Image (cartoon, rainbow, N blue to C red; front, side, top):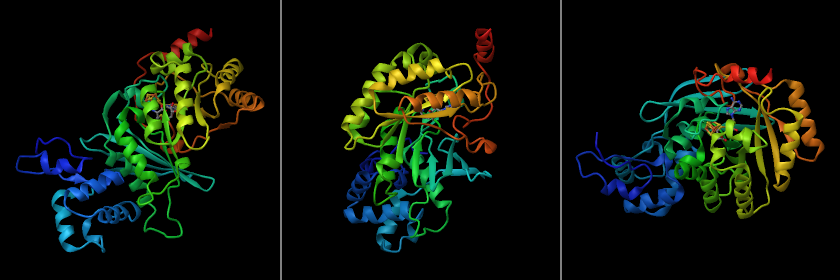
Length: 385
Ligand code: SAH
Ligand code: SF4
């Protein structure tokens, strides 16, 4: 193995970083259009070649240069020498009875992440992971319990969409977008893998790649405020905020990054983001409902008050249990009461149906068994007495 600097995203580096015997190839899968063009220029080729190759990779699901019929022999040979199209490896896939598909994908270094496709009402929504594990340690999240291992490369992020589209077989001109929506709601905190996620999202929205509109690409964050501020200068995807609590005291406990960036600061940053976007869409507030923790009428009232100042809709997510989590899903009556109250005060509120339960593909179930490090169940049981 060469000890060269990783060359994943920068074309020029492929020529210059490795002064040892083997040159690490650039993985073209993860290059945004700008970077693809820069790469082609760095090897003395014209811009239009970058577009041609990009279409083969992302629109036709091609992962070898030989199949690119409008690319000449000499260029194919050149590309083969310095670059490759290397999707992440699928180690397992499972299709649920309700149409949900889940893939376990091995990324470089041997770790695995999960990707889930959820079909609903004429849409196919892909839930994409951005990191192996997560450092933010939200108390109700199984990914958080894993700790952080590493960021995914742009190729590994976009590779999940590439794999999902390919699972629909040959490209069908009457259905050019088999995956119609992408949500960055899989494993990891996307704003802590900023550059790679921004590049991957630009490919999702790129006409020469997946051509999804900005309304159909959603980034979900637990509230990394400085990165959120920067995001508005780089993209205008839809935004989902993992709030989960209507006051700082409770949110500090559930979403510890709140101690650094409390609710009011987070909502300010959301408003700035909305102001920078061309259209006046609101944000989505995600609110995972846990029995006896954040699901009473009092919480709903506080939530409505806190959100008064921002254009938003609320998505209530019944907690998805995992072993030793220490939490339980809210009772249907509690969800229903919460839902009705918010709608009654004029905030559009929906309840997310829990899909893919039978194959452990629902939100927050994206890892195996973990220990309850905190004895949370006992704590809440005591508090309830
Ligand atoms: N890190 C980002 C995106 C990944 S988590 C974020 O936190 O927004 C995607 C969504 O699933 C978040 O809203 C998260 O709070 C929610 N989630 C995590 N664990 C969950 C669980 N066990 N049950 C239901 N939702 C959960
Ligand atoms: Fe990380 Fe999101 Fe899970 Fe929190 S909810 S630990 S930010 S993946």
